[in-house]
Length: 484
Image 1 (spheres, rainbow, N blue to C red):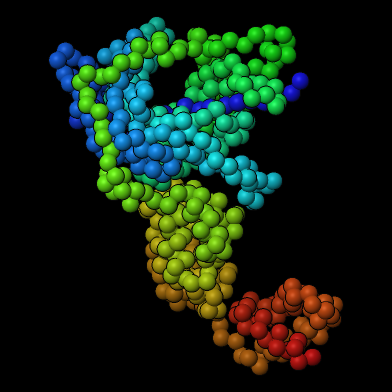
Image 2 (cartoon, rainbow, N blue to C red; image 1 turned 120 degrees about the vertical axis):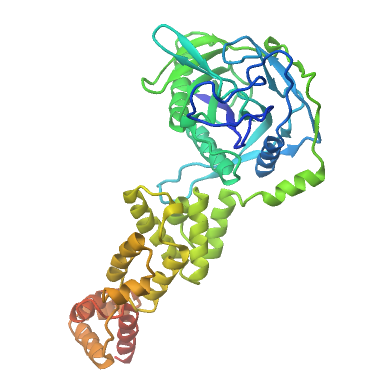
């Protein structure tokens, strides 16, 4: 019997706010243990929570980016459990009235090659709700210590429908979700800092069946690659259990990304185990149309929408857009340069993807610290288009421009890299010599094979010692060939 997997993801994302969810204490990472705390975070007697408006803005904005319905009224609930990372012994969360309902995440599955766009599909969401994060347990040889610096940080939980059927789909979902949240300034989504965490709910069923099988929750998926690997491992484990005549049980399992193995942690809790009830210290939140309209106006273009626009507006191929679009700053850099070099967007994209990223990587610099600006790059592309500098010289100019921040024409003048003016009579003679010595290429060109002209350009450039204007060479060759 063949089986298919059914996968739903619960993704926790820390919101990028200056202070915590119910207090003014700063958020942060890497600070000395238990320094980002106060009486509210530590749940000392008599303290009361006060809502963070910035966090509410961020989750509404996230919901709008993902096409969710924003609830006109949402409320707060206490999720009760006893564990050292929760100083109150409950977590303030949202249960039956979350702030965002529905919505979708657009994903792209791998194409037949890395240079071809893959299949796109929409993964439906169940809900997004807001809660407070818990502390972090640090385990040592003989003891465990808790750091409450993370406790109280605004935390958004995005729950998908059980609508994915492979580890690759889950990987694509997380990749797309992360890009959208970073684009919107909702979160930096750095998994190493715990800003994005994921649990996967996985079951299997016979191919063609419509019911849901026994669900297993997989935890400790601390990188997007481990999410993919862990899900693939769990699918294989469940199929092996069933095919051996065993019975799957609903449980929570821990996945070790280093060893590729998982182990049972506990039986899976149900909602009633948490004894949810409305928080008596917090009022419900009403989100009106004016609030939503203000945040909608701040939402950026979504990554896949931008990629489709780059295809149509700039005719830039997938090999370039697939590198530019995932990084909002890089795609903004490209668009600024492309608008300064009309009609040369693909050339601009090639310089960014091949040269700018290489130099940034070698120098270990972020784009924000690059001395090459969109104006610099557009000017260099225009110098090449005009035939003022040749491609090889442009490569040298770019490296110097990256190091110094000088304008490309200044570098070309200073280093003598501008193409030498070509005597038109001399150029025409070189073209005639090339045509006379390449009868096969001439015949192919006359027969309609336009690319055959490239075989005639090499001898001309060689005669010109590499300093002829390629555009002028092409024009002269075509003129002489047309007269034959």
